[in-house]
Amino acid sequence: MVGLVIVSHSWKIAEGVKDLASQMAPGFDGIRAAGGLEDGEIGTDATRIMEAIQAVDQGDGVVILCDLGSAIMSAETAIELLEDEEGKYRIADAPVVEGAIVAAVEAAGGEDLESIIASAEDARNESKL
Image (tube, rainbow, N blue to C red; front, side, top):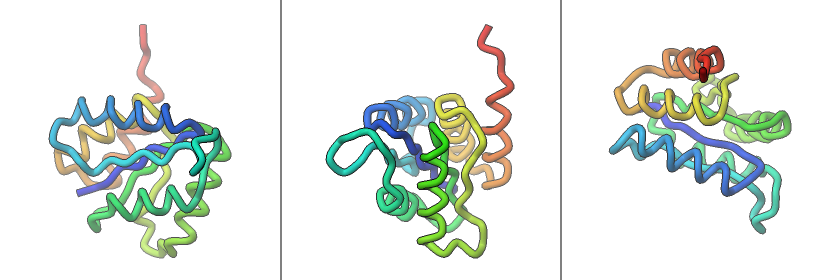
């Protein structure tokens, strides 16, 4: 099963998105939040992201959703630390909330990494009105 990691500068945002996505995909426990710094301050931490990736990695890949540019840099560093030569840890160019919901639902349904990435990224094109 594909795992999912939510990266935000805010612990509250990361946890909130994780909670919402988890409610939309009941029974899916392959999602982790990696938000904020160790002391609760705003920021991102490559080590926390790396640990979240490891926690949800079941061998089929991990989709990572990030809130801002520096979160992407921290996620890229985490992927480098994990020496992901197979490309199974992927950052989706997707909106965090909508992308996380789509990704969680598809991961719970057993979709593969490429399909989940594509669907999460497609979420940015959905009109809200």
